[in-house]
Image (cartoon, rainbow, N blue to C red; front, top):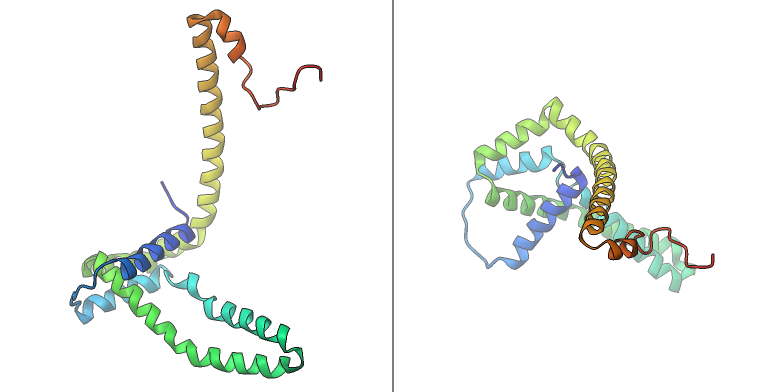
Length: 185
């Protein structure tokens, strides 16, 4: 089953963060080449793109909270929070490094190189761009298919009940809650 790129990134990021917090601290030495390959793979799949707005959103929220209580200082609060956010921006590299370490622990250096190579290719870039659309269309197709399967299975069960217990089949012929109006309407 094809997962959307966003879902895949979210799952991988959640797994990565889970490994960072839940796993016991283990001293695993990773070579610089392995970490470089991991960074290249992480960059090629835009694995950390979903975290791009965290600092911006936090700054916006904090500004709003402070300005509500101090509307006369709106301009100064905005400047102060922006300055603090800019000072924190370089810490984004820490996240990039941690996520690269997660990938380096999960994949061999060769696998990471292959991942980076594929996702840097024209086909890999197209998969990144078109993956969400493909996933939406796949889910729509699966919904149509699923509804047909349920409908056909329900009908087969009703037909089977007619053979097993004809008197019970009439009671089961109209599924409850699916467009059946109460008596008298």
